[in-house]
Amino acid sequence: MSEGNWLNKLKEIILVKNGELALKGLNRRNFEDTLAKNIQKAAASCGGVNVWRAQSTMYVTPLEGTDIEDAVACISRVFGIAALSRAAEVEKNMDVILPSVCAYLKDDLENAHTFKVNAKRADKKFALKSPEICAAAGEYILKQFPHLTVDVHSPDVTVTIEIRDTAAYLHKQPIRGAGGLPVGTGGRVCVMISGGIDSPVASWMMAKRGLALSAVNFASPPYTSRRAEDKVRDLLRKVAMWSGEVRLHIVPFTEIQEAIRDHCPEDMLTVIMRRYMIKIAQAIACEDGALALVSGESVGQVASQTLGALVCTDAAANMPILRPVIGMDKEEIVEIARRIDTFEISILPFEDCCTVFTPKHPKTKPSLDKILLAETALENDTVCVDDMIERALTNTTVEIIRPE
Image (cartoon, rainbow, N blue to C red; front, side, top):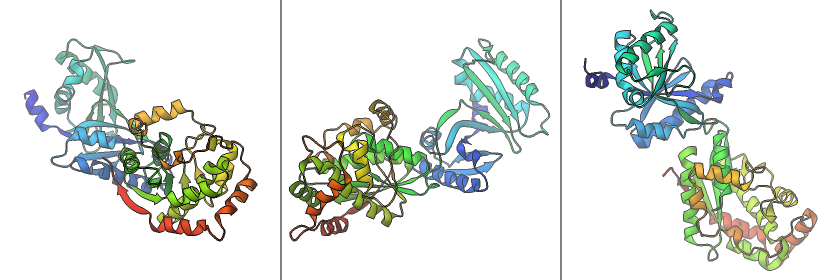
């Protein structure tokens, strides 16, 4: 049979290997069910896939019209996957397997200098044992590609033949998965997102731990522009390619920010502003069913992120504040931002409200007692910050951000 006929007969699927899910106990099935749903959602834009499980592997079958390369690209960003590979599904017959290997992996083998064969025989009833499969396949491949030599230690191409209960699978080279845990298995968090480099990275890191995302952005027109809000949307679209859809809440913050500027000591403005952001974000988190807030703060990066300042801001919350980049330096954060393609958006010159009314000489070691005393100026006969918070929450807009 000609090479073209062999290729036409091959049914191509995607094999997915779980990562941390293998360590789960009695609730492992729940994690796997969530992962399967997330794979289907991720691949929906490519035409769709079916997902089924057998023998510790997930099998992803593209629906008719689905581009398998696009599907692989989408699925590779799904958290909970350690590795994946395209594979041809063929009959469990060496007369079919051997020519199919050469047809399916032709491009890889033609462009390689060395190879080895790796056989996995899950079906113990198959006539040949794993070493015999390797020997037969190696001999056949060398006849078809005489320029190749065998290298069992560092080959250019590893030919994997897997014999399972229902069929044989011929693997292409494995692709590294996103790792982590399936989004949605760990609950929901609410991310305080600006237009900077750090908070999108923090969002991505929390999604990698299986957490669904809500997001809060504070807008202060006319000091901040519509373009700053669009920048946040663009950042979240990048994050959503990994996390799935994100519920974005845009909070009007101008009134509160101006009141803080007009009534509080200048050197405490940033810390007090952060405290009221946390109070508002916490209210939104509760409405969204989130169990914690997430911030992109890193110790010592700016004056408002000293340990003393973080103690003062944490005191405004009644729920945990998670800071996944807390111990990272800027270079490490930028490296992840480039990987997830948010860096170039983050450095666009559209300022967020965190840069509005920035004091020339902010306190780096603020005292919580003095911060609380300064905040009493926001509750008097002419100013009522609680009413301002209520108005901000009432006028908050909500939208769903989906992958770009």
